[in-house]
Length: 213
Ligand SMILES: C[S@@+](CC[C@H](N)C(=O)[O-])C[C@H]1O[C@@H](n2cnc3c(N)ncnc32)[C@H](O)[C@@H]1O
Image (cartoon, rainbow, N blue to C red; front, top):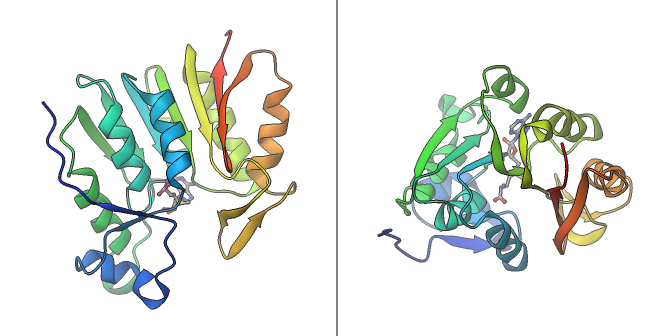
């Protein structure tokens, strides 16, 4: 039986100065999820029951919490983010993420404080659901795809965030995802790869299912 204490998240909220990570770390606001509720629903739909889930780019733990809620209770959720130290060598975002993800006790969680490239060097094993939401540059997201997507089981899924041209996505301060954004360019290429099919789409998120090795 899972223990969950609501409400831990705000989806794409505009909080002005309260958006600062330090406020979240002090418990003065909930964790900020950098995706919408519709995208959360899509992620949960395709991650339900997944035994091994990997998330690249965790931030305050919004999507990680949602994935944990639906994962296989005997499974493992692997959370990868470098959490570069900030003021006083602290990363407030990491503190919020730890607290947010701990609000659910389903399955097992493994934190990897490293870039996805470094994490890939020590990785062994297959993946059932992969969420790529880290470095959004064209080179960064392509590298994540090349290093991590081959590890996804046939029948498993990869979700790409900010991979459809739409308003309201996240690319630093850019609020409009256009066709030149790294994840959009990658998603266009994957759409024509017969090894993958589109399992679902919501706002800026595309979920691909592996059809063959
Ligand atoms: C868009 S946020 C993730 C949002 C989160 N998935 C959510 O929906 O709430 C991007 C995160 O990716 C992390 N990141 C940036 N480059 C990365 C890399 N090379 N590997 C892993 N994470 C990275 C950043 O530190 C940041 O926390």
